[in-house]
Length: 283
Image (tube, rainbow, N blue to C red; front, side, top):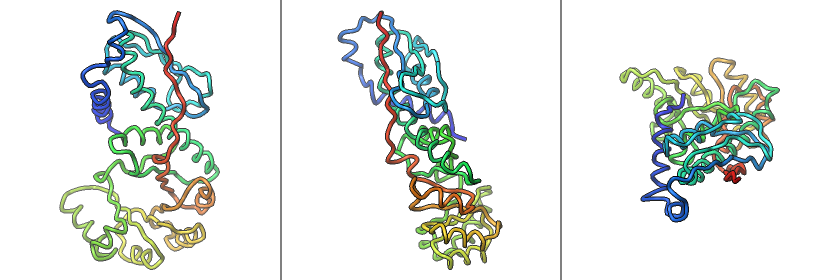
């Protein structure tokens, strides 16, 4: 579950970053008491994401800004659609414009790409996961966009799940030792966290199976053929996840192996923002 409190704190930071000591472009030519209206215009096909964020931006900038919502997060959108109308003081509409667009264009781009990949594998039972490969400071919004697009959030940060990757294993002195130390640590700290272990080959897989006391095995940079073989060896004793080198071109072949999860870093990096525009309503 993503914390709403965190998103509000991040939006406040974004407002402070953008406005500074004043929106001098608007203050120079817009009367303080002028009232107006603007509409969020869709200019590209996709999945809408970030309506709730736009609403919070407006609320935090001014209690006098009102959002009339026409479309909701997760809806398919087409050029010409109007997602919402924003009314109130023109100065505050202008202050909120770029912030709303920055959040919503990126979130909608992520949701659109995620939704496309989810639909590609809808004939299988696999669940698509995001990763921690997010933009610093924007993780909440990017992971929320993945969720809106139909993907599932993996771990939000370093604190809500244990993932023993190659560097952890190498630094700890091997897989067996890393797993044993982790279970001892969690018991000592009284923490109930799931443990996922990354394996790079079948030898490491056998070591994990022999050691036990984990919840999920990540098969890193395995081919689809090797994934099938590994799943047969694991034989439903643990959850399975495929990761590494998986993209739109080979996703279906990985999904059809029967693996439980596929993690895709591309959900939240190298994303093309969706084209949206906030336009003044005149007359």
